[in-house]
Length: 217
Image (tube, rainbow, N blue to C red; front, top):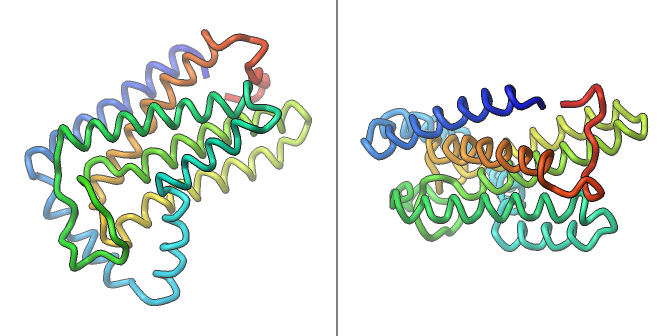
């Protein structure tokens, strides 16, 4: 990704996040959020609840910490593991601070299928899982492309991105977040990923960097 592209995407993600934040703070998303919630609640059934309960597990704080520790102890830790773990940690710090600042209450407990605590905006699961999985898919995808396995790289990127999206959506299905919380988490993740990869491409030591394939962003 070239510098101009970094800037354009950062501006887009930042603008969408700030718009979402403004609307949430002004109480302008409630009608839409509740309409989405009611529509999703209407889809609930036992098997689907089990699936989404399992999916949301991968965005839990303990799970994310365990995954970050796991990739940091792998042989590629300096090129992939440590950068991804640091990006995820930055995202976790950012959404934790924002939750305290915004202090938005969660949806009514009667809609919950899992127990949660703390504030609602932005969704930590949506934010941290998107950062972790997208950062990982970009760097591992580069390795696969450099080893002439472009098909595997494309497949991996699709699977990881879809899974990250499902983790965010699971929070709405389980009743512990509004759509605007999840959207805010995704936009915040986009901002952090762009800034993190700008740092990775320009300031991370070259010997610990996975080079960009000519055909890869």
